[in-house]
Image 1 (cartoon, rainbow, N blue to C red):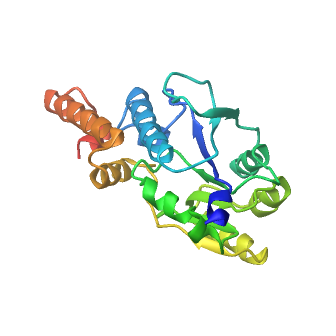
Image 2: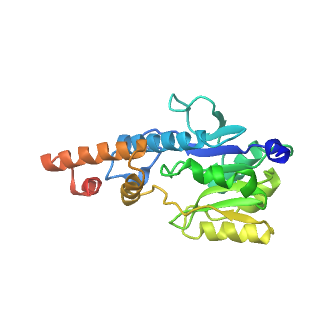
Image 3: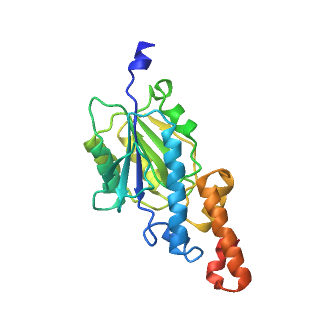
Length: 242
């Protein structure tokens, strides 16, 4: 019992862009205007923050590209993203929270509003994490939605992440290969679908019907249906209504 009570709580990180029109969810256009896409991004962030608020943690850190705003809940530290490619920014995020006396660190993105707190709480519990050196959350598109290290270290993070091709179908496999080469024991989290496209958004909204994201998506699609009916939306934008 004492060992369990003494276990270090994890640091939870979210890597995100500020939900500003033209900065986020650009692949949802032209089906969604930049303003609607930004609204969906903010809703996805709200769901992500809410889920992680229910996971026991020592720190909650938002690794942010862009300005802060009232959409950031209290209790979250904000660390600006470093420059460079996504591989560099991910590695630097772990470097920013590296603590030899601290607990594990796990990072998630802003694209999985269907994430349930129980998934991470169980994976990071003392009983489950005893045999894990790292955590890997595969995404349905071949990438990953979560990545964690039991002993976060800036040099280890750079060795694992730098040079991994990002945002492509081979990203997840490449990172898993790095983990295997490093001899790390990996706990695999459930496969989740990232919200990158209109089809993704519709699927995720259906999976989490009570979420901020689903409510925002239904508002978006209802508006698109009305616009299509009125003949004010060009054919390329009508995908949001389907």
